[in-house]
Image 1 (cartoon, rainbow, N blue to C red):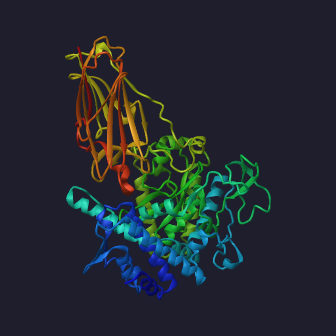
Image 2: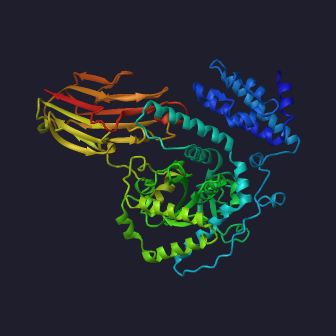
Image 3: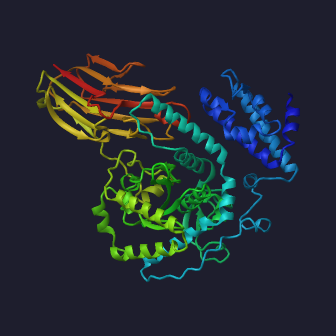
Length: 632
């Protein structure tokens, strides 16, 4: 079939059906272009709901897949590896351009297209019926304590998530079909791994995978972080100046920041909206706007979700996992799920009060977000603990007054299970120790939410250390996350945690896969390169160095790459590609050595995991990294 005939045939469908089909086909093409060697994403099952309902059900839908490069079989469409990238790109661009042209000509433009073309503004006349503000019930404050009054306000504000029109409007903006398709693929991959290793306990569902997909879409495709506004006068860089009191600015919000341009010195307003109808249009802000809108998205997906407010100026979301029977921490700003200790361990926050709010309950969830409950209690001075409990019970009873008895019993049982969870302090992992992603470095440093690692460790070798056969060894076990410095069977020093033994490191962390029971060091998600350097000082050793034996275990996947270099003052040696052992002789007059590992390359969304150092089972006591120094 020719291209013109195909487009004429596809154009017989409804505008909504065309828009959705082109969107799904474009996303399929984009996934293939991002990871062209992945045959899994080149196979589309006809039984898949997204493929069946959004593409194959349309007149000309199957022809679009054929034109894109897929070949039809009895149960699926498969794209051969020989299909050129150029042809995929060309057809996708043609299809999108055709869709935009007919929608423009027919004056049938989707809300997303209008936003992209700046044809719609918050609260303009033509969309008053669409973005009419949600009317919340009047609030009569019961408490005089400022903290408890804030709790009452938050408890009332979250009722907006239950507005059916607002949720329906939000759901139309979420690419549900595509996210469901991706989550099913993600779940299948996990299940396949579980079949290979029968010891794995994979207690997850499509909903759990869908939460991860929604977080990724929200972070990467939907919402935008704002540190400072671009100057609306000259396009230059601005900096926060002060809060506006001008009534002209205070429209639909009581908080408007004024950012002053560093070039033209003019002011640009940045309204801090809480009206969700406006946020669905502007799609930008900081953590308040992000968490507010993401929680709405979760409720639009019909999940039990609640807004979590931390007293020291951060907010996020919790979603209840039906399969796991527990609340999952979800931070849309960071695209992270189920790492609740990250704020205390990674951002250096002094947790005091963390309260979760939904239409049905209000809960003190502070204990989920701290590994030191005693320290937290010492900081809780906003009210007496019994006053807080009384307020929680009072507000919760008010919220649940109109609920059915079965629903009340379910919520009570769920609350009791959650309280039992809080009885045990959790221990932070390296995943929890990762710093904040969202916001500029200067902004995060001002807030004290990232930590600078200034502990540059140097392994100093002394003559007195050479107890056994003029030899010393430095070795690291990733499973136990510890170093040992020894001479023969004599342990001279032991260090806990991988970072305590390195001279410097960049964009790497120790990944612990609890499901697979593996540990390794890899790049941080989204980083192009990671690096670590170990430094040895030999200036305090009177004996001459004879040789160095290096054992450096690593694993690569796809085209992931690990480069290891051993350098002295005068020369450098590289670990041969694919080799993990190396002996260097004849370097007698050296005062120091450095061992540097660089982690690069990889493919797709998991590229950061495709170069791994010291990968080993958590039960292992072996040392995948060792340096043996032999002296004369």
